[in-house]
Image: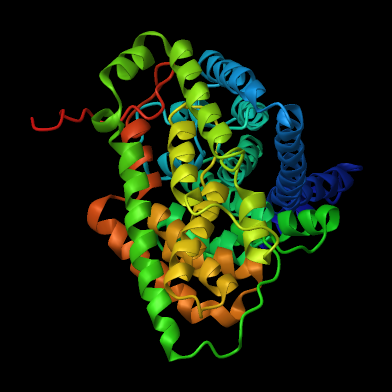
Length: 472
């Protein structure tokens, strides 16, 4: 209400008993509601994102540890547990929780950039909401209980975006711009809380999701990152995701050689992973493609058996997200087998093809750590921790083709400020090499699965555009 209208109201109602008090209360109510929408609602949602992220982290760790406990000394049990839980997870995903499949980042990209249909909320209802949040958490935990190679960080991004997007229902004047800001804020808050990397959360929202710099003015996003980060800090403490890396202050000019090899190797292996997911019709046997279309639960059984076989064959190295393996290698606690990068890569591809909720960040960082062993074998004089930081950065950048986000994530979660320039160079080069062979993974999945699709059929995940058989 303008100053002139308030003055006129006071003059017109001065002689009416009780009317002035009523007008004052109404004005205070309007101000309180505005304050709630501008401050209370986004702050509360951000706190909730942080709380859910911490709980989800703890539950994921417990699920992974439970699987390891079940098969300790009895690896043959994996051939029962992993296929059975993979079938359960796929059944639940297709029956009740469509839209929760995969990492969740393609869903956020689709909601931000997909062309809108006549009914604007169709895509939002399909990919977000309480149903998707519950499915994302519950089914990914089932996957971790089964030893699948999936991570929790991508799903946390999806969960954060879904929680923040739900607050749009409280705003009297909803529009696409508000929806976009809430989605970006929730996604940034989710990544920030998942890795305890607030700066990476903001950069991720700008570089990977928005892919523009207009989002720098999004005050809701900054607020969400701060409050979700404070919640994570209060509940989980100020920790480094992979621990402190110790590298010499001056690595020397010769360190450019490990940087070049790391960038080339990670760029090529990351591009191969993207192609494996986007062009699965080329390499997947015809009988398995037919099984996937006609008997999806038998298909899930085959996927579970393959994951179990990889895990047993590698003495348990490929089970789970790979967080423990990468951390142990980075801290020097336990080396990995020389073939770890390849076997983990295969387990990650197979697990993702199951079509259940699960992310790529932790497994990608773990694969990068495995590739670092190859680079270190060529340059034994280079500090192992420094090479691991390079390859984790390079592989993540090759898969996502978001180099700034990749090196900031690794820098923040290892306190690797002394490695900024080498990691930046590795990320930029690896992303450029990967881009020669494949589009950005998350964008490609969003476009092929969700753009222009109001309601996908059950099991619509990874339904990429038809690919002709080799030689056609």
